Image (cartoon, rainbow, N blue to C red; front, side, top):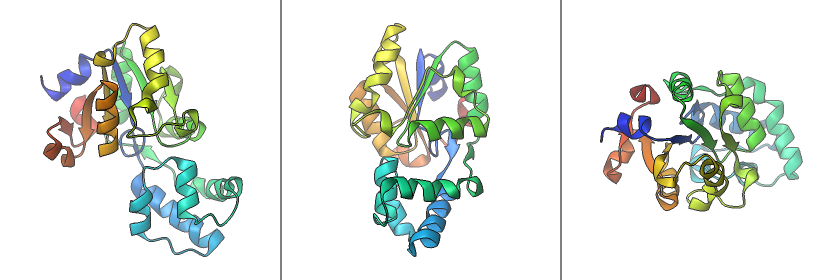
Length: 210
């Protein structure tokens, strides 16, 4: 089955958020570096960012800002520069999500970002977030990728609509996305050529799925 068929024959398609639906890494690395320097006098290296990238948001900023302040203060510092570092829709993402929704496919998001900021980012980038079946961030669960239990609530919601795990496809850009999806019994499509060596179907960008 071709990669497009995998997606379009699924009853549910669940997306990772950062660097899958939204262009994130470049802009947010610069954002974190600016916050670390301005508020905490930290020169945040790309090696540090790479080491911790993909961890749940609250844990991530604690590590990047070296626990220089209480969590709420670090969040506020990050938010104060948010308007300068907005995420934008990834290539083909808006059209793909819209087409899947119009097709009657259940569409959701499971992300390591926190839920409310994720919804805000989706709206800002032009997605109809209110049409999604769910948006689940790291603050909605104690389990995180690559643990397949990160999908527990998504699976419950989809099951209520008669969608089986085998009828669900997760699309993500990281190996932890692949491992979590496999553990949950979902199909998987990778975004990026690094997935070729994993023997899974992949695309360079979401436009290839449209």
